[in-house]
Length: 97
Image (cartoon, rainbow, N blue to C red; front, side, top):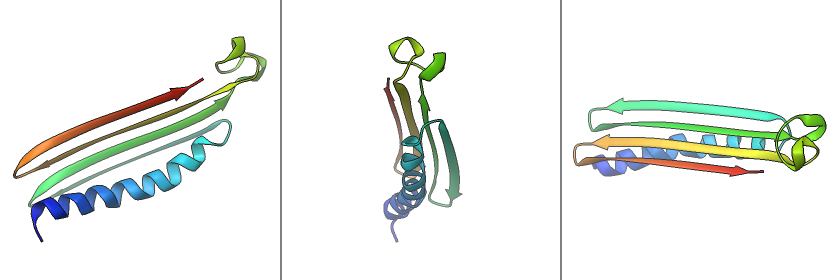
């Protein structure tokens, strides 16, 4: 297998479970989920981190409407891949109030 294919399989293998378990937890009020993974081999290395947080905003806790009602959701993902032909890095941040 080529190094590029191996790297893609490693990234997909790390991202799929994190997305499957991280995004549903963001839909629940007052929830937090974090996962990270690192792999290294003879053809390169990869690292990935995902965090999902959701909260409610009633009685002065949280954001939105001065702390009364509303809620918030945060999703942050980052990954880094390096191999014999180069390296790549990405960051994604999303916040809703």
